[in-house]
Length: 416
Image (cartoon, rainbow, N blue to C red; front, side, top):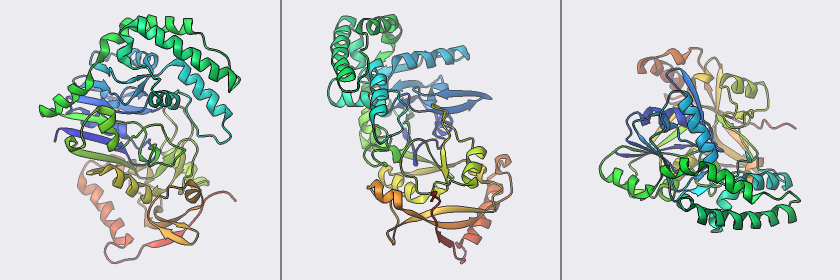
């Protein structure tokens, strides 16, 4: 198999970066296919911690070509800062390339994001990195792509036109201030010679690599429940972090994807607003947060924590066509007497096994739990499959796989 995709199956923060880093060791090319620097990947390599936002986790493997794909909204200033950090740590950045079709995330996108979130009566929980406004401009056909940056005179003209248009929006609608087009042009002029050598026509590069049988690894940001079409809309990101997102975000036909690896965290977390059926508001939720060190890599915000939701994972499996699942952070649950897993939702007295599209329905859903026995062993020190299987077999026996019954309960942990 030469084309692999790694996707998140929940709300992100499942540990995709770690899995990508392992798989990238055998890859010839790593491609980021959507999103922007609102993502956060924390990877530890040789004892050193790396926090990445725009660059894919696979960038740490210097032997593989690293491509920021057409579906990405790329802030070049953030990109250069991350590259500088990597170089300061003794790593090379010579293998990084930017698709000429990728969108340039502009300073006015960040300001627009800030103004829109401040004005909204219902907060989405944006990171204010300008991701949404940049995608808005892309689909309104007002965005600026990286190939336009090669001709600086033409680029400058586009910037001045867009700044004039945005200033009308900022002052007339949101009561904000005007942005300085001259200052913005000079900021980009200063980085022109650093960025242009990295710009490539990536679509043929990626497809040629697959055709030649090379190992190509596709990496996204966020996860299935933040997908613009199939997530908890409107509390979602502005792109498709699913396997389907690879086809439009990297320019690869679906038939060329051999393997779709879904990363599942052994419990659930979420950052930002939106309904979260299995969320825990008690000491158990705080325990999960501390044990799993659940704080956002990009924002530092404490993550909302809850039990594993299999309705969500089934949803992710369906829309991604998963061929494999990687279960992460199982060791965090060690020491618990009981572990709960949500297998269905109860909404207005009806039990359903899937995630509804209407967020008002999701907000009033009660989780239907299966209660499983916990374990006291520290599985983080286990090195063989047989050690893990010992715990696995005990849970299976107690959980009903050998003839016993699950303990099912309907619970709602929201504050009254």
